[in-house]
Every structure is written in C-alpha cells, then in structure tokens.
Image 1 (cartoon, rainbow, N blue to C red):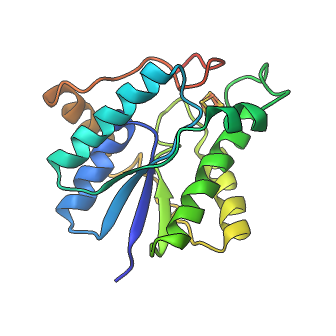
Image 2 (cartoon, protein in one colour):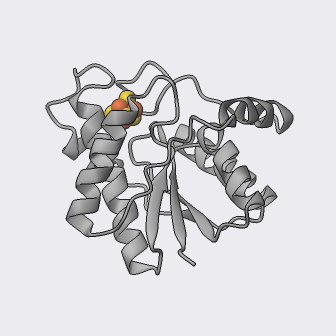
Length: 178
Ligand code: SF4
C-alpha cells in the first residue's frame, strides 16, 4: 500500500480532505511547508490551527522550516504580478518541490496537495507546477480534484463546527483573496 504525503496550506483548505482520508484509513501524513505566509504571527496561527485539526483526527502533522527569505528571493521581480499570475506559479512550484523532496527522503510514495482547492485559485496552474516538480524530483503526484465529491460542503461544516480560524487572504503580502 502506498504512503501519501498531503501538502497543506492551512486548516480550512485541508480539513475536509484530511477528514475523508482519515475515515478511509489511508496511510498518510500532512505536511506544512509555507514560507509564502507572512507575517510570522499569521504563519504560526495557520500552522497551529492545521496541527490542531490533524491531532483531532489522529493524523501525523509534519512542519518543515519556515524560510520566507528563500521565498522572497524566488519571487523577486514578480511582486506586482496579479494573483493567478507568474508569482503564484513560482510559489506553487517552490512548495511542491520541497514537499516532493521531503517525500523522497522520508519514505512517502506519492504527494498530493490542496493548493488549488480554493475557488480563488487556478487548479490548472497548480497542476502544472506539480507536473514540473514531479518531473524534476521523480516523485509521483496525485492529481485528484479535491473540490469535488461534496468536499466543499463538508469543509464549510467543519470550519463552523470546530470554530476554525479562517484567514481572509492567501498568504503573501501581495495577495488579496483567500
Ligand atoms: S497569492 Fe498566494 S499563491 Fe500567489 S504568490 Fe501569494 S501566497 Fe503564493
């Protein structure tokens, strides 16, 4: 049976998927690698909220380094790009590539993510970044569309039920939507 690594950006985006995979007894862990989030208080808040939800479902939660300087260096020159533009492609790629490297070094067989789950995101753009990162690292990516299968309703329910913190912007200082 393959071991799955789920890259998560925050609890509201990942809770329904975590809940579903846990109920289906999938062998998986959640990975939090989001150097795009700032300021640090906000990063901590999202990380803690994501960990809290994982604990409630007995799912391993792995938090990697917080290295915003690496992220700012990678998106240099793209600060004025609109959301869904080139900056977001670099941002998706950077996080997915790191997740795949981690998967490779730690016995995971496949990676997936919820980076494209929000209706504000371009799922094709996330999938393209995942395809490139997968080619670079040789780690397979699961392209399941996590927006489907009634997960949006479950997500809304879980956010309400658990009084989950839900932010109103994507993460970086140049973003406007969640
Ligand atoms: S808007 Fe979101 S996806 Fe785009 S660069 Fe900023 S943090 Fe990354």
